[in-house]
Amino acid sequence: MEFEELVAIVRKEFENIKDGGKLLITVGCKHVLKTNLLLLQFLLNEKKLNGLYICVDIPQQHVEKLLKKYQIKSDKLRYIDAITGLSTLDKEFADNIVFIDNPFNVKLINEAIRKVQADGVKRFIILDNMATLQFYSTEISKFFKFFIKSLREFNLSYLMLAVDKTRHKETYDIIRPFCDGELEIKREWVELMEGI
Image (cartoon, rainbow, N blue to C red; front, side, top):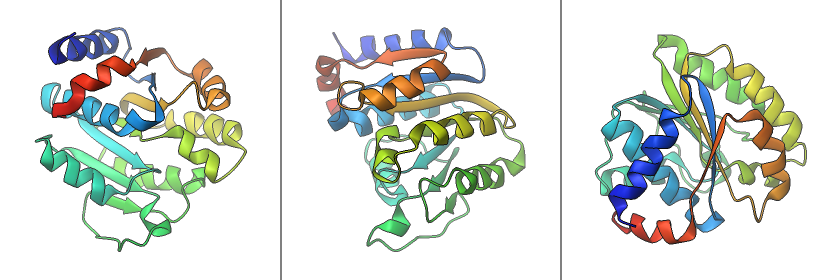
């Protein structure tokens, strides 16, 4: 399989998801970031959509550097960074970033989404790695139900969530019923993402 075939699979999956739909991306833990970069390349460069990237695993500074490295346009991307405050990195404030200090506080995440969405622009949302939230609380089911419910008030094009369904089956089992579709990124496909 060539890289373009992988992009075609992603494109087809998005055709099957209605506007405002939720897509669960299942991928091995080691490949969540690469998969998110593939999605961002497709959504930002090809579809030219506006987006919101919620960082609970990797700080915004690192994501932004990777986007530049792989020439993924980020001018239409906003961030909610819930992890930098827990790291040794300094917060680099900018107009396109909202920082929160607790990645598992859904009310803070909801308030941050409200700030970002105040302009009324329709955006996709990527929450970078759902399984990371298990490190902050055991109540992922409660968090996710409230999170999905709270998103109904926002003007979304898509919501994408990544999880390793083998290593984090409990998280997968909680999330899957709330999603409209599932795209499994196979291990051999990841090799095609070397350029991304």
